[in-house]
Length: 67
Image (cartoon, rainbow, N blue to C red; front, side, top):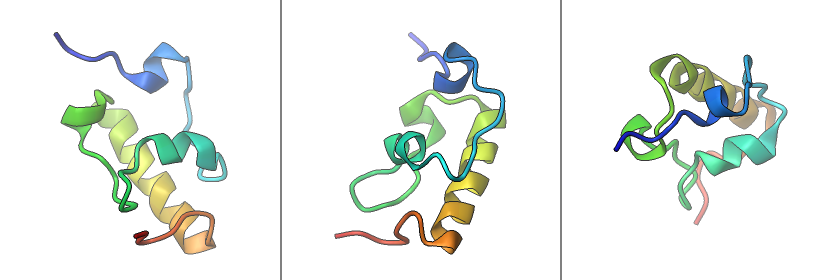
């Protein structure tokens, strides 16, 4: 069975890079963005998610790597 997209389910139209709590859900313990297959996020939101995570990392809100 296919997972439902988190963002579609919660009626989120835009992924904000400042919303670190939501972004952290889609990062693995090492700080990498998890695959679309694993999270069940649609392609449109996976692209937005990647951009948001990269922006948050650049602004210092999320780590690039964590151990």
